[in-house]
Length: 352
Figure 1: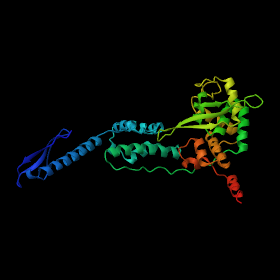
Figure 2: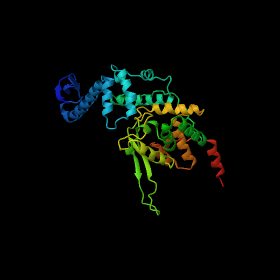
Figure 3: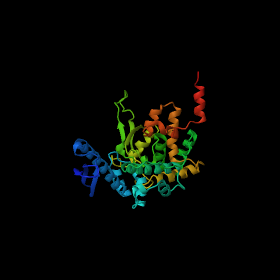
Figure 4: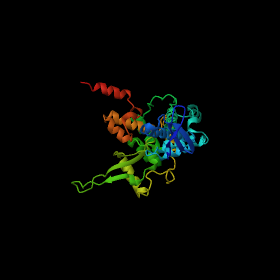
């Protein structure tokens, strides 16, 4: 705490009031520039000297902070970083345990980020996460922020399945891996991610039984799949409700009849009847079916693009497509909703 006081000291130009005392473990002796007859102005100057010294001491302390100390504060800030952001930043902190914040340069970040053999979008996300953390720490030290040059963003992938290719994939899957048909069908008709599929439990599927029809038989249940996803940079959780397509309804009914279906049980299991521990299981099986269909370049994520593109082709609004995909805004829509020649032709032919 500031503990300076005004002390008169005689000099060549007469008596001058000095700010003296101890701050931050050091002795302070600084002139105010005012004499005893200007005590009110000297007191005002004393507060300014105390403020400047406090700021200087805090900066010096921050300048001596190590990267791990700054990371501790980063994790404790009110707007906590997301899980993926922490996964990017934490390895960088572990790799620089003896570096101080002011010693880190953009070259350290670029040397840490492995750019070969990785998608440019992944490299960009990692650099952005580390840059955000470092600028947070540099702001605490009153240091200028810096921007790290990222690799060029690749053009959006334009790979989607046609209706014929989707039907071929499902038919081939029924022959090669019958247990995988529910998984593949769900990805095609919901736009879910692999991780969302493997983590889906029966408690996340809503069933609504409407009143009985005129014939006295209950109508088919109307089902929603509730999917939660955490946004990497913001850490916010988005829960979206995806209506189940009529193609999926009998598949879910069959799974309920043959699998444990308590709210905590997983919906989609592996070929051995156990929970799927890694989304790579989905990718591995999918690629084998795609290779048999002579479609080796198409992936499970392309089913998500196909889902979005078909909605766009059916004149579904951007906001509704964004909601079904689980995005925060429509900025990501061009990456997923592919405008092909058929969609362009139908748009032009609709003119009157």
